[in-house]
Image 1: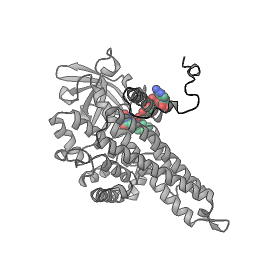
Image 2: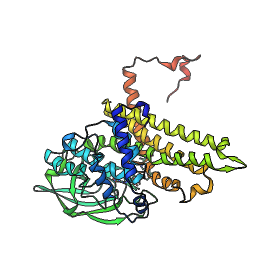
Image 3: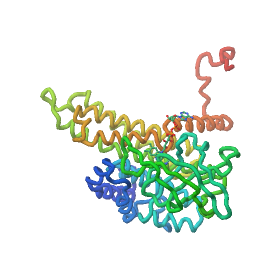
Image 4: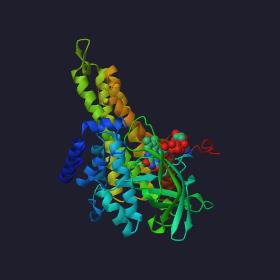
Length: 414
Ligand SMILES: Cc1cc2nc3c(=O)[nH]c(=O)nc-3n(C[C@H](O)[C@H](O)[C@H](O)COP(=O)(O)OP(=O)(O)OC[C@H]3O[C@@H](n4cnc5c(N)ncnc54)[C@H](O)[C@@H]3O)c2cc1C
């Protein structure tokens, strides 16, 4: 994040997060990338010890009661050793615990949030299914009422922390015949209630986060583990778009920042045709483009974080975080490609981490809703906003600021 926008307290927090990023042993990063580590418990335990989990959550549950600006600036730093660190850091504390704090009973907060923020328990979020992830409300995992319990059956796919988590936030159909938006319920499910890891994915990047397919076969979940209302999963899901998408966008900046630093240093040292390659505009302009893209992304994250902290209307929040997720992740993809390009052949090898950064961060355009789904939400919210604005606007109407603005016979719409 831009240091000139941060308060002394925020700068101190950023430095804490930088210390955390430096704590990660190099071999740990390599072992995760080699799939020798299946889930980075030690990393989360250390984050918990340093009180760097769930920064926005209330102090009484172990958080710090901070806002989105703080959360995003830490998310950036946490991802510097690798995108997978940010994924597991965000999913448990920022998404699952956020949902429990906002929609769970006091008992659930004590039982799940408190140990997770200490780094003693781990959690995963289960939305996506083998039949599809974009169509969230088309889920087919079912939960059938049975006395004081619900019985869950179904599968969830691509779950970060599927291997390693102690408990799961699971969305399931409780009224399969009902309207899709009122047919699902959100549950907290303990692993030892019978959740099985059926498949561990071989991933292009972002390895070591325990991404798995889970199977639920007659898993009994007490009714007291419901978040929100029965058939009220939508109320839980919509606000979760904020930590999912704003968090992902901020994380992606941190994941690619090292690529820019490495490429800048390399082009300062490397010579061709008797001169440093940064003296070729074809090289230094690519660095300029990458810097601009990262700074623009930071500006967008900061602005969005401030908007959410200020309590912007939920529809506007959904649009802003969706825009930010798509825009920032695409800018960051360009950044890492520009960095690889100016490094020539060596950028494509494992002598420098650029190729790993590229493999890792590619996920950012796919997960927590693909970038196409981000556009779907952005246009939906924007059209609604514009319609409301037309009813109550104090802005100049620019449509008539042209010579033939009143050629009504030419303004044909149907
Ligand atoms: C490494 C990894 C980790 C993940 N972690 C988690 C996790 O922890 N928890 C979890 O629940 N999920 C997780 N996911 C799942 C991820 O969020 C989904 O893969 C993603 O939402 C897309 O769903 P899908 O793969 O089923 O693709 P599909 O929904 O089948 O989409 C396929 C393509 O069609 C496009 N498409 C679909 N519908 C539309 C539409 N209406 N308009 C325009 N385009 C459309 C999509 O954009 C995409 O390009 C993870 C995925 C990966 C790869």
